[in-house]
Image 1 (cartoon, one colour):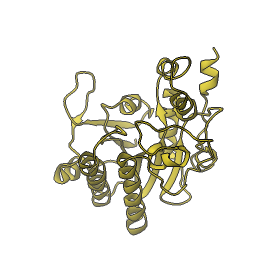
Image 2 (cartoon, rainbow, N blue to C red):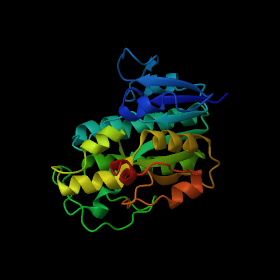
Image 3 (spheres, rainbow, N blue to C red):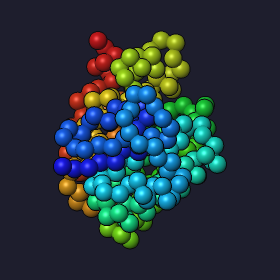
Length: 256
C-alpha cells in the first residue's frame, strides 16, 4: 500500500485531498489542531520536526505554506521557501520516492496581467501559458512559489528525487465559482475565475495522477486547471505527461 504524507491538510485544497487517493494510506499533517481532521501536527519551518515526521512515506503531497497572494515576504520566505526546503531535505534523507509540490498560477501570473499588483491586476488579452513556461511572478507570493520550483529542480537533478510541480489555478466549489463571476463582479476578476477555475473533482484527479503517473523526467512542471473554455493555462503538458483528464468546465457550470 502506498503511504502518502499530506502537508497543509487543513487548507481548502488539503481538505479536498484527504480522501482523494483511494486505497492509499494517507496521513494528513496540519499546522494546528482541527476538530474534523484526524491527522498529526507539523510545522514546516521546524527542520528537525519535518525530518522526523516525514519518515516511512512513499510520497509527499506538499501543500503547507502561506497561500494568499497578498502575503508579505517575511511570511512566504520562511513558510513557503524555507519550509519547502525542509520537506525536500526530509524526502532525500528518508528515501521518499516522490514529492508533489503545490505551486501556483501566481508563479506565472504576470504573463496575462496589466498590473503586477495582485490587488489591482486586470487581465490583458490572454495569451497561452504553457505548464513549463519560465516564471513570471505577479507578487512576492508568486516569487516564493517560483523559488520553490527552482528548489525542486535542484533536488531532482542533484539527488534524483521525483518531483511534480502543479501550478494550481483557482480551486473553488461550483457555488463559489458563481459568486466570483457574473453581474456585479469586476470584469478582470470574472475573466480570471473563468480561466483558472479548478473544480474539486479535477483537483482530486490531477493530484492522484501527480502521485501515481510514471514520469518521463524530473522535475515535471504543469498547469492544474479544469478544462475551461476560456483557459489560457495550457493543459496539453498535464494531459500528456500525467494522463490527467479534466472533466469540468467553468462555462458549462455557469450556463446551467
